[in-house]
Length: 498
Image 1 (cartoon, one colour):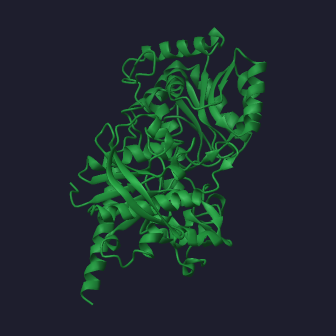
Image 2 (cartoon, helix red, strand yellow; image 1 turned 135 degrees about the vertical axis):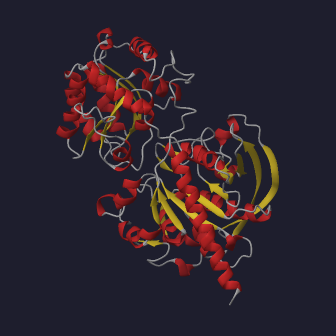
Image 3 (cartoon, one colour; image 1 turned 90 degrees about the horizontal axis):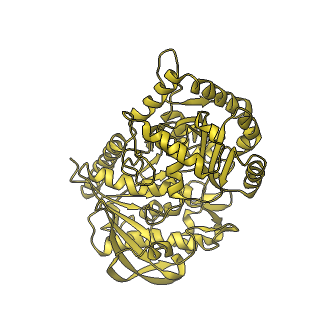
């Protein structure tokens, strides 16, 4: 048990309240997972418009919290809501900052005041903890939007009798998003100009909130072991590999877990027929329903049906996908695509779908219900990412008996084992080189394996029986929290003895 650990999670999004990607799933699942190990938890989140539109039963717990932003002090009200699992979530309500249609921007680009918005969130989270005397001893923040939290603790609040007792953990969900702003806006964050240097906030003449989290946090985590190694290289470090190498001792790769309460074909309310590894009849029904509703040729009942559930971006490997999509079709494989993103990829996929309407079905939006139905109805899931910090779709696919075909990078490599028909070991198919021939080659291998019903049944069963729940990862986080608290107590005792 870990009753002496109390963690204040600060995140820019959290399922089911506000979500753009996997970060929201982690912000929902991880606090609950560590709470089951005896850790006291709470989550701080902006009170976005999308949360209000859900009609959540939020109770005001603090009125007029005074939060500095630049030269001004902007008050906000704080509301509390509970997740279905009982985790308390505190919502910071400031309409001029968070009452927007989207979380971070529109299709035209990021909101111009994102620095102000997330500086405010970071400062508000710490001030609220102090005002209500919340007895946290660890603050765990996520991605660039909360990177200022560790910076504030090491600068503005380093001598604060209450906040100086907090240790900080900063989790990098994706190095590609760095929160870069003009250096002249440092004062907007409330940080002194003395922090504008290469070992502090400065990043190639600008400031980076991601770098702030990396530099000032007591511990840094990434969402898979391999990604923690990859980001220390020029290929994956996005210009920050040197900084990360300098902090290697404090950098930990902890694999994201799957939320099997939501992603489980045996209990999934969104699919037509529930099923499990012991009774696969429901998956065949789900496939038949998906083919019929998507208007695909009925002969795909006996041929492979590939699913794609992703963002249409270069990071997700769509420059590879669009080059091989017609080759995939020529393998007599059906495609169901749920993806939205860059227009150039949508245009190519849309044109292919018009050319092969009975073989390809695309939907260019996020639809949670359809995502579950594709996961249940498809035979294979394509994940050709250029890089992937962790990825959750391939983990969900395993549980649904949908065999992943992935690039061996980041969390994809950590979670998928290449299937070997001779030994019967493995859960999917992987390719290492970021080349079309490598990607297509593994699809061809999987399609051939599909015709071998014994081998295919084995790879499907292996995946469905794999366990990527949060239990092990939550234990790793609790161990990290304990170490930080122990270290901080030692530092405080040392100061008292001086």
